[in-house]
Structure formats: C-alpha cells, structure tokens
Length: 394
Image (cartoon, rainbow, N blue to C red; front, side, top):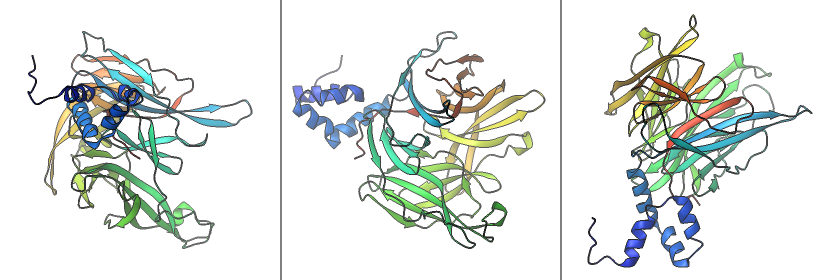
C-alpha cells in the first residue's frame, strides 16, 4: 500500500490521480470545473502528465498511430484523397497466437482541399508534425489542436519558365524538443536548382547548394541556418526524434543517416552498417525502445518474396557509430514495406493490398489486423509508436 505524505493535501492527491488519466478524460474535466481547467492547463501539470505517459510507454498497453490515404474516383471522373488516421491500442502480450488490440478512428479535420494528402514528417511528446498540401501543421491528435506554421521565406514561388531561374523545393523536415532552450523546433531543408534550358527539363537540371531554416514555437518565425551537405543529398524518410536530435534516412549515391542537433543547430552524417554484400538495402529508420533503428530488405525476384533485417544503433560519438542486428524476418510474399516494431519482436507491416500485418518473430506467427474502414486500395501508409499527451501547441 502506498504511503501518503503528511504534507500532501486532498487537492494534491486529486492532481496525482488526474495526471495518470488519458487526455480524452482530461478534456472533459476542463469543462466541469474552472479550478480543474486551471490545473490541467498549468505547465507543471502538463509536464507531470507527459512524464507519467512516457513512463508507461513500455508497458503492455501501447498505442500505434496509423496514417493511411486512399483515393475515391467518382462516376464523373472527379476524385479526392481520403485521409484516415487510426489509433491501434495494443493491450496485452500475446496469449499463444492471439494479439489483443482495438482500433479507434480519430476523424481529425485536417485543413486541406480534396486533392491534398497528409504526410507525417516528425513526432515528439504527443505532437505530430505533418505536411498537408503546402502547409506545415503541428497537430496533437489527443486534444485535436492544430497550429499552422507561417510560410517559409526560403521557399520561392515556382518560376514561370526560362533558364537559370532559381527553383526551390521542399527537401526534408524534422521536429523535436530543444532541451537547452526548453522549446520545440522545426528544421526544414530546402533543395535548390536551376535549369540550363528554357523548357526546364530534368536532364538540364543543375543542383545548387541546399539551404535550411529553423522555426521555434516561442518566437513563431523561421531563421536561416548553415547547412553543409552535398547538393545531391536527399532525405528520404520521416524524421525520427531522440534526445535532442532529429534523424533522417538519406541518400547521396549511398545510404546514410543525417542527424541534426536541435541545440547547436548543426548537421552530421552517420554511417549505416554495410549490407550490400548480402544484397540488402536500407531504406527506412524508426524509433525502437529509445534507440535509432533501421530496416533493410532484399527482394527475391524468383520467389517474389522479401526478407528484412532490423539494426539498432548502439552508440554514436559524433564520428563513428556502432550497430547491432536485432531481428531477421522473412522471406514474406506480398509485403509492401515494414511499418514499425513493438517490444523488439512484434513487427507490423503493410501488404500490397494496404492491409496491416503483424509478425511475431518469437513464435514465427503472421496475422492480419482488422482495421476498418478501407474501401479502395491504400496508396500510402505510415505508423509510429505514439504516446498521448496534453502538450499545447497554440
């Protein structure tokens, strides 16, 4: 039985209990009593609730946030994107071959038009950074709060034509918490190029040095920062945030990880383990139990199957990185790509029909998850281990 401190008041005990409740309950409590609303909105309570949520992250109750897109085509040939966000709540360890879970559709009203999709580009402390159309949004799915970021001053309108006119394009986006400044930051990489012909064809494209900028929530503006990477460097994945750093899987002729220190605002290059001699190719990174992990896979054309490995970064000293192979899975048939890993042995994947599959490597068992509603073929899927919070973004 837990002991109660002599100095602890009934109000303290109420706050302690409330700090362990889910955000949905707290949002309702804010409407019941003004004093509760004041408590729940206070920075100290928000921090306490976040700490409790993070501490519970590795229990048998875990959330996976799933982002899917499908296209509806109507009889008149018009069409629209439908964005489906779902929360998969994994309740228990497997019992024999049964994985217990339920699915909640979030129905988040993203500000976008019918032809725009929504892509996740970063996540930290319950806040998801997405691109919706041409807009960068911060979204807390648990509280349904949105915040649209101001336009970039480095991204220029597309030129109408002509050679040697500067063209800018989105290159990569990262989001996380700067522990030194005690503020959330977004970093954006801009790709720049010119064309040597009036028609601006790809074969006459001239890559120019990348530029970059950082947005801080407290100041609400972008500032340009130094970036010293090859003009042929292309971040290819959603960023992963861990302990003050953003990470991207990146290519510039070879695969590596690009990191960004949110404190000193510097980029660095991290080598991936060499797997080319095995015919395996890296193409995705994610967060696995407070470590950076990477997927690599090999496609066997003769068998029409895919095998994959998951590697975890053990250490990085700013120059060299060390990696450990965590999991080998497959060969699988009909698998499009991996999504995320839970508890080191439960691999979630998406198949070629857009269905979510769970593979438990400990017992070698593959099963489909029933996640409605899907009418048409899924054209894009993303997933991440998610911790609900009440961290405000406005």
